[in-house]
Length: 615
Image 1 (spheres, rainbow, N blue to C red):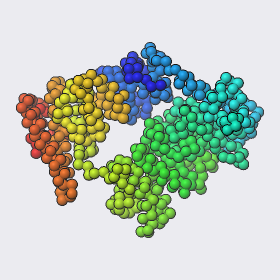
Image 2: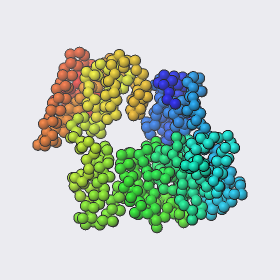
Image 3: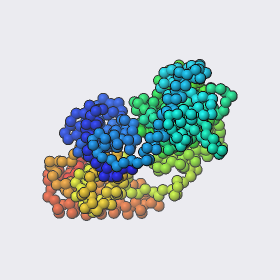
Image 4: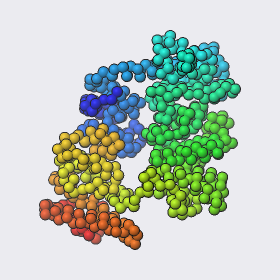
């Protein structure tokens, strides 16, 4: 069900975030906050901070953070509604009745749990499962492996599970909704999985949401059969083996992506518990979003040159847009991981992982082998790669990727770029707005936003003096855009932590700002004056960068636009400093060094009531 904002606010207000997190993390008080070792990644120095005043937590090491609901979801592997209900029950927050929708959903999950127990009993204890037990043992999978993955056996009967399910009180509708029972046009119902090893497909919490079936007779087809998508199961969002490998993946920060269920099981058996597989579908953007929660890199394990190249070409745009590092492992003799580990020790597979090739490098190498290094061969290689590069959405990532490919192929970046299709909507215009944060000091930008969150009455001042384009950090810029849409009165009533719920894509940014060191500076008690000083420093940095950019564009078509942008910021800065001086008396202990004085740029940019003259 969808919970109202009032219900969610009540749960967050009533739930003691320090108490909840303190049950999992040893917390020590540090001023108004609490600190401890992050439960989401291995660390020796505490970088995990809990703020009871803001009702949030944040790890400065791995970036994990959120509300008490987010923490319970991640630690207990609960869905959002389940986490809300668990906290509401614990802290006495009344919830509206969920009605028949929840009952129907629970009923469907009950069918799947009943099926898992039924199939497991047949495999492990019943005489009808002897052939399957012998097959698994011959393949090197023993009882502990069956138990770890919940393997079972489906009888060679048309209504084996169906009859069992009805005996347990499930209706025809319940059984059909589970995907395990199908119905012909004639109305006759039958089991979908028959004479197969049954393999539960689980969600992140480890609950069965679907089943795969694997034949043991080589004459039977198809080799693998999955139950259809249901309200519980969407194959584009599920990875087989993820629930069993979550902890290993969190520790190593990597995932091994293979093709088959038995490949995953074999890798887990030999200590590579980060292995996962898609469920009979191609890799999707949703799959990678799922992996980004737990891993920084993905190893794509392929078992054949041609198939590997095709799979890499399909998945490359997804990885280039995801932020995940992707490397390719091409196993020798076209062996899949299951066969490879049956012939070789785990150390040999670990060595294969150590020698993994970056995804783009793998593609270039394989295509070059296919087409050759001649002029025509290089052209064919670039023609094959161009559609991949054209799907990279972020301009910076596309530019870096083009340069990387150009270096590998041995041509100029311009030559590669000329073949790359324009992104949707046409090529981006030359960017003459704020330079990227990597080129400018971000401290003042963060402090302005932190001031706005702490002292919300300053919104009118920020609206007058600062534009979103003045900020180099895209997330901070977007946050300022959203904040400026509030009226002054509305924003004064806003709780800063509520912004994380209203703008979930900016939750990490808001959370990290709230966790920054408090701005209660004894030397600067006037927050309005501090806001002006920070904005002066932001515009100083922006002016300097725009002037350098203008000089670099002299003689180009963009020269005039760059000059206008520079003059506009320069004039704004002169006006701002003039107003600043007339309003505030200088304080010597905070005065900036004059331009040209000794000291670093950071020292010259320190906020002060008497900023340097505009150039």
